Amino acid sequence: MSPSRLTPWPVLATTVEGDYPVFRLLRERARSPRTGACLDFFVLETRDWVTVLPLTEDEQVVLVRQYRHGVKQLTLEIPGGLIDPGETPAAAALRELQEETGYTAREVIPLGRVQPQPAIQNNICHTFLARGVTRVAAPTPDDGEDMEVVTVPLTELEDRVRSGEIAHGLVLAALYRFELWRRDHPGTP
Amino acid sequence: MSPSRLTPWPVLATTVEGDYPVFRLLRERARSPRTGACLDFFVLETRDWVTVLPLTEDEQVVLVRQYRHGVKQLTLEIPGGLIDPGETPAAAALRELQEETGYTAREVIPLGRVQPQPAIQNNICHTFLARGVTRVAAPTPDDGEDMEVVTVPLTELEDRVRSGEIAHGLVLAALYRFELWRRDHPGTP
Image (cartoon, rainbow over all chains, first blue to last red; front, side):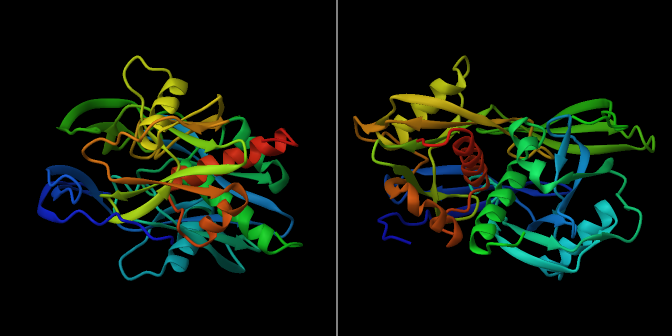
């Protein structure tokens, strides 16, 4: 990283505003190193996440359509979710893949780390490519999830983005990391 | 979009858990159309956002390095922020570009809509390409922002992603939409 004159803001006090199923909401009072002013920032403290782009041997992408309570719409996404305590990111990717789609993978390849929302969330999302995926079971969504498995040829994936059907920021971030990975590994997916 | 058997979850009750500078936190009790069970979901209600990828005539990308309170690190990002009430997304993109970098643009081109976090946020982020950007003033960051302007050749941008220096999910999402735009407009920018 090129040099910078910027420095962290010292945190003077942290208060838990609320404790919810997916995150804790923290109020953090911090002091600006530039102006000396003290300001409150609100941060969602949550576990790290994973996303996984599952590809079959014949270059079909295994997606999940689901109802999302934030936007109150159906979305089309790659599988993903929270990493369990003690679980490695790669293990979480395989677990979420199987829970949400019933597929397992021959191998998972890390595509890089993404910050879901660095202004207001403390966590990172580990992105993976899963290759040689095959269906081994029925999906096992939890009570809060309604989902369907949708397979799309890899060659049609970007048109699903152009049309707006795939619009989840972390999914587009994973697709960009996958683009870079393909440039670095010509002749594969 | 291909047909789906999934349907929205009826919301039975909404409670405001907290009202913060950037978002309101809502508790929404909703009923699963699949199981009939009633569950609480927590949603951040916030204004829509913009991001803007600023390109100079000689294909330099104008980035901002800033301290982010969620991850407590310096990040390297494209400019962006909240749309003001009554403001169009394109006007917000130009305003954020000038506030954060001091640059203005010959034209802004929409690259598409992204859902920052469809599970827990209700908003969307409008992404733009700004072409022909030139520096016309000093940046005017607000009290909560510490930032530096960093210009990077477009040809080096993806290496900043590979290295992890650019890791913000919404920035990678904008870069993916920009990739698709370039495929659709060969010979540009």
